[in-house]
Length: 409
Image 1: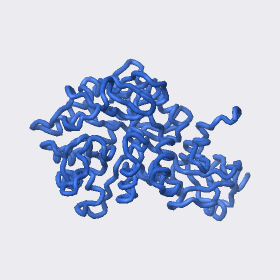
Image 2: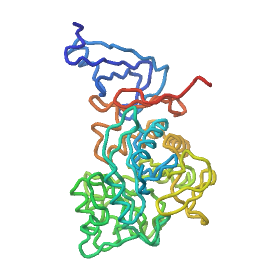
Image 3: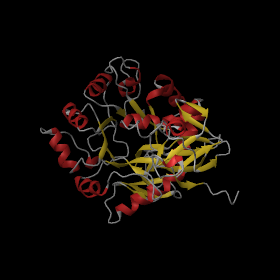
Image 4: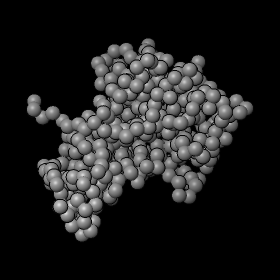
């Protein structure tokens, strides 16, 4: 009996001739995988006297953790904010298609909708592992309806809500259930929001501040009550002002509780955020930056008219507007494009760009012990990329789930 089967019968795969992203830098090391987890080769050699069953030559590729998208409204004609009979097949389609963008886990995001939509859609979203069928689902991100009218952006005004006397009960009645909910975006200046933030945080749900006219002290108070994220920084909030920097001021606030980090989402598509603004945010608070796509149903489709929940949106190149207006409404950018644009616009290291789409969102959600890194015993969700950060192959639980077709090249 071979010695490397002493602990498990599962095959051991060794990825060699690669640079792996570990401890914030690219290192010339091999990556060892067994039973869907990253393996410590020293334990394998010395404790088990084992060796690899399969060796794969990565031809000098970068190996990085799989990307995690915590704000994606849909794609490929599927809108997560529409209650359709075939909702589940729609979410399956998106999860399968985004593998080619390097996304291995995501939070399907619903924009402001009537209660009936939440009641129909949320029971159809379940947390699940990724695999050949598609990227894993980490839980839903509910963006609205408890947001500011002045900063509603592409959200339908007639569906916006405020917190009534029984604030948290009001939220529960609106959503119907919080079973599969991972993130809630709300405006912290709303009356009774503190109570809601505390209750959501107590249940392990991440509270994000966004679509808001909050001043800095209101934003700081929300963080003190448990909020940890900012939804698409700079977009749908008060612009930075030197006497009151608003939510943006959280990036350098000295009132963040000890041991707590505020994260912020950035849509790095070249449309939503000027490169200079990207650079300012990144230099002010690099460890909090989380790349998100904010992609809508039109991602992956030709220009034209598509939906975003209750609204009709128009795609013109990379611009997406509420039809007939110049109000931006999500993006059609893919996560790998956002990573490349971010690296180019900020001049940051390759490692930093990759971590903004993997480690940082994992830390935001408190899952960095299993996802977002290539540390030993973490999930073997990873990508092979070339030096220009184009995805060549995507792996989930150590299994190849997508590979770039090179036959026509």
